[in-house]
Length: 527
Image 1 (cartoon, rainbow, N blue to C red):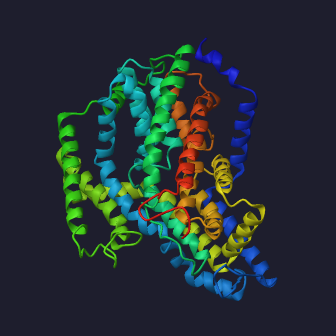
Image 2 (cartoon, one colour; image 1 turned 180 degrees about the vertical axis):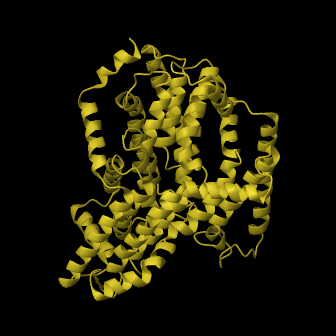
C-alpha cells in the first residue's frame, strides 16, 4: 500500500475532530488581542462588583479585600499612573531577558547545534531512537529553533544508520513538542513560568509561600526529561518505524530541491563534526567544569555570603536568589569558549550580534508582555484574582476535590486549552492567575501547580493544527511523501500524545504521593 493510498483512510471521526479544532482555534483572536479582550472584561466585571459592594476575606488575613473597579476614577488613575510600571515590572522580563541573552551566545555560536550533532553522530543504530527522544525533549533549550533543527538532523542520522529517516523526522519533532515544557537544564521557559507564577500570587497579599525561581521545578524536570526521552525512543523504535515500513513509506526523498540548495542544506545538516568543532566542544565542557569549580569555591566555605543566616542554602539563600546569574554565566562562558575556538565569535561585535538575534526571536513575547503585565496587575489590584481564588478554593473543598483528582482535572483542562492556545506564556498567564492562588488556598505550593501545568501544556501541542511548526514539519515530510496531508501528520503524532500524557502524570503522582521535593527548596504542600 502506498503513502497516497493511506491518506483517505485517515478520514472519519478523528479528521472531523481535528478539523473542528482548527476551525475553532482560527476563531480565537491573536494572543495580544485576546488579552486586550480579557483586560476589558476584567475591568467591566471588577467595576460591576465594586458597585455591588463585593468584599472577600482571605483565610489568615485580618482585613477583608474590597473589589475595586477599573472603570472608576480610582481605577483609571491607577491605570494611567502604572501602565509602564506594570509592563517593565512584569517579573518574567526580569528573569527571561538575561537568560535569553546568554542562550543567544550559546545558540548562535553553534554550540547547541554542535552538541546535538555530537550526540546523534556518536550513537549506535540500535540506540538512535532513544538518543533522538532524549535530545528532542531537552532541545527546548533552543526555544522554537528546536522544531526546525532537531527533526531534519534526526532524519539524516537515521538514514545514515540504515534506519527509516521519516521515523527520525517524526520522532524528533514529537519529542521536542510533547516534552517542550521540561528539560534537564534551566531554560528561559523556566524563568518565564516562574515570573508569571510569582506575579499572580500578588492576589493573596501577605500569604506566605515558598519563592518560585527558574529551578523550582528542576528535580521534577530532570526526572521527567529522562523518562520521557526513553518513552519517546520506545515509541519511535517499536511503533512508528515498524508502521512506516509496513506502509512502504519511502526512505529516499522524492522531491529534491535544486543541486545548489541541496548541497547547502547537506552542509548545514551534516551529522559529523569537524576537528575544530570537536575541539570547540571539548573546550566548552572544560570551561563549564572550571566555572563549576569557581562557584563551589565561592559558596561551600562556611561564612560564604551566598549562605543564609542559618549557614545553609535551603529554603532561601543568596545562592538560590542568584540562579539567574548562574544560568547566564554558564551559557555565556561555554558559548563564548566554543565560539572563540571555531571562529564564530571573534570579537565583542559578534557577541552583541548574537544576543541581538536572540532578542529578535523573542520580540513577539516582549510585545505580548506589555498586555500580559497589565492584565495580571489588574487582576491582582482589582481583587478579582483574590475573589476567584477564595471562592474556587471553597468550592473545591465543599465538593471534596482537594486531592490529586483536582490536579488531574487541572492538567486535563490545560491539555484541552493547549489545542487552541499554542502560546505557553499566554495560557499560563490565564490559568496561573486563576489556579495558582486557588490551589495555594487548599494547600499546594505555587511551584507544584506550575509543575502540573507543564504536563498539560506540552503533550497535545503536536496534534493541534494551531501549532505553526506543524506546517514546517509537513513540508519536511512531503520530501518523502509528496501527497501527505495534515491529517496524515497528526495521525502519526497521536501515538506520542497519550503515552506522554499518562507517563508524565504518573511521574507527577509519584512526586505528589511520596511528597518529594520538586526543586531546590520547593515542595508540594504548604507547611
